[in-house]
Image 1 (cartoon, each protein chain N blue to C red):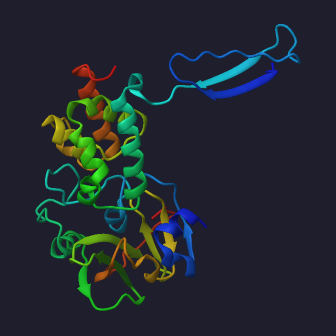
Image 2 (cartoon, rainbow over the protein chains, first blue to last red; image 1 turned 180 degrees about the horizontal axis):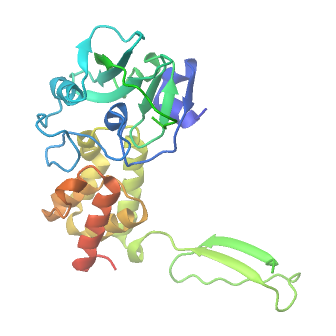
Image 3 (tube, each protein chain N blue to C red; image 1 turned 120 degrees about the horizontal axis):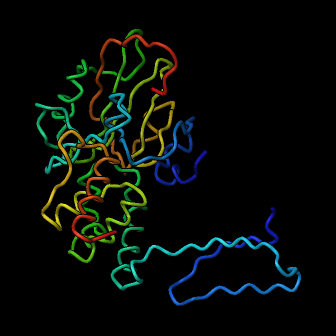
Length: 153
Length: 139
């Protein structure tokens, strides 16, 4: 395991996780949770980065919920694995501003892109909870789409 | 042919490399790799930029928020360097596409990125590098 990652996220030291990609600056966690690995998603004020059209370009939980809403996600109460459902969680800081997103895999584990660092697969969300990403602010769900073939996603 | 000696070294401007090894036969193949440190002419601005950029990279690598990245004190200090920072940022972008777009826009007031390339870091970097070449900031 990468000790550099565990320095940033001490909570990962006590849970199962594995690195699943090289580090890259080309996409971030918000994109990765939306199954996009070619663009960096963020509602920056200048419009430099990708943000879904017609979604308010503001750093608010509501705007992020709306962005994932375009992909069929709706809010729900629990991050527990449910048959036939795909879930995304949005982390927020102490001010309620989104910081991170993670997507649940069919196994119940989670996949996260860590900023410009690597993708990881992790057993629980607790491993990323802390100073850097804050806490889970919202859980979203949608019917799990069918998968074909072998995909990185 | 296998080189008799392989040497990898970093040199500063004004340094010279001299290889003396009594065990090397005359005419032996010697492979030398020289790395020139990224410091535009070793100016004080270049050293300052390098130092700030390293801090910024280290302390923002795990962030997704572009705003948080741009508000980092080291990034703000680079923006505060003004036009002196532009060629240094562009050379950095040439080597490794990264999130320097906020700084470039803030310093220059320009934006050469096509709408369809928003968020595509590699394409955004290429647009800024081309912009810099056209204006003589980099070659």
